[in-house]
Image 1: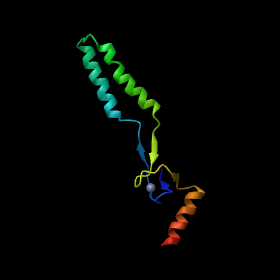
Image 2 (image 1 turned 180 degrees about the vertical axis):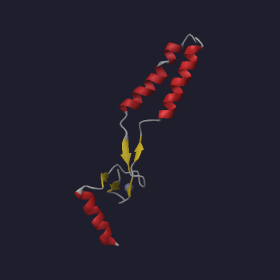
Image 3 (image 1 turned 90 degrees about the vertical axis):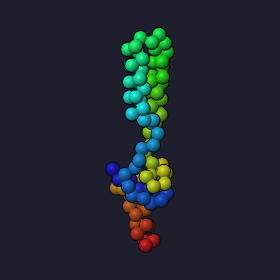
Image 4 (image 1 turned 90 degrees about the horizontal axis):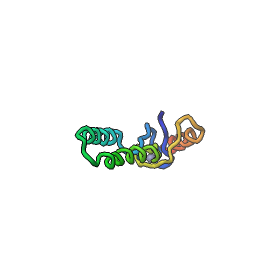
Length: 93
Ligand SMILES: [Zn+2]
């Protein structure tokens, strides 16, 4: 859904910030599985690394931010505030 930034006025799809990388999580689990498969004696300790990463990804809230300035103050385009903002931007031209 398109959003408008109240800071810079950009209308665009927001970008998601934070929450870590899904690819990195898969890679971590993959490395762990390889280590587990080799029967490495400390693999149960190493298991904590991918678990910690998965948990941190789960608990760190993902945020949608403006694609231009990175502001979190973005609102959906179909809201009255967005319409007012769009009108103000039009008037400035
Ligand atoms: Zn912005």
